[in-house]
Image 1 (cartoon, rainbow, N blue to C red):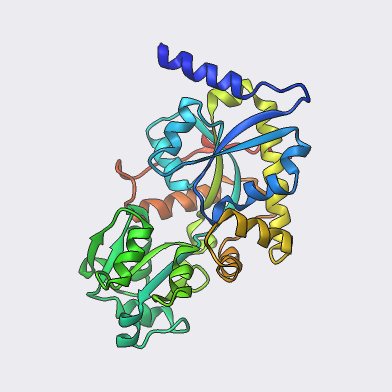
Image 2 (cartoon, rainbow, N blue to C red):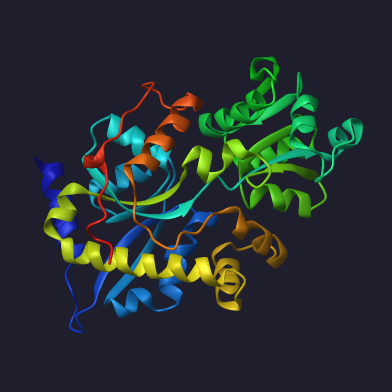
Length: 328
């Protein structure tokens, strides 16, 4: 009971408007390329236009859902894997917008491995996959290991023959690649392009080169999630938030190369060069509309289940798990 009281207090307090009529909400972000619509909605004044002020809370796959349910954040920019894992555990939350599509992944091999196998950024994907047969790959999550396996399987290479090194983070992957402890790893941009930019590896596969990682085949992307109790009490705030994010994704869809988008992305990804930011942004398919369809969710579910990334095995999804009613 005490925990419930704390959650309700956080929920109510976070949604109280100030004297100007502005409501402050907290949103969980991961500090990656998928944060851009929310960052742009803030920088371009779309949240301000909706009388919202946003506070950012850095979350991870391990902390995001818990932060949402505790009331410490009201919205979470989440991956479909984490969301469907929560749904499978019957966590009471709902997806209210899809603000990014596809898998902005990069497969990067070490410079020594690239030279030994004649691999370059232009090497055909099938040739890259065959070069990885029996190699040593780094894996910092079940998800990225599964995505690497999907790539290998698409070209007839047995992921079971890869010698896997479990590492705690993409940063650890990067360090292990530099010291030749691993030959390659897969993770989301901009990390692979950063490694290449530093001269420590070569990006030999990405979402534009691997059909199995594309939005069309994987149905993957990023979603905005809120807990059901918050949505029932603050439908007006949810609509304002989703409307602002929708405006930002539509702007990105039409103006990806604009100075506005590039500057916001550069500020949101400190330490990442402007050239890497510019190369990373097109790896995501930024939608004109954040509306969701059950058919796309089913494609996403099939992809996630193929990764064996969920502890409980196969998950399920239905129209009860998402809604477009908060979108304009």
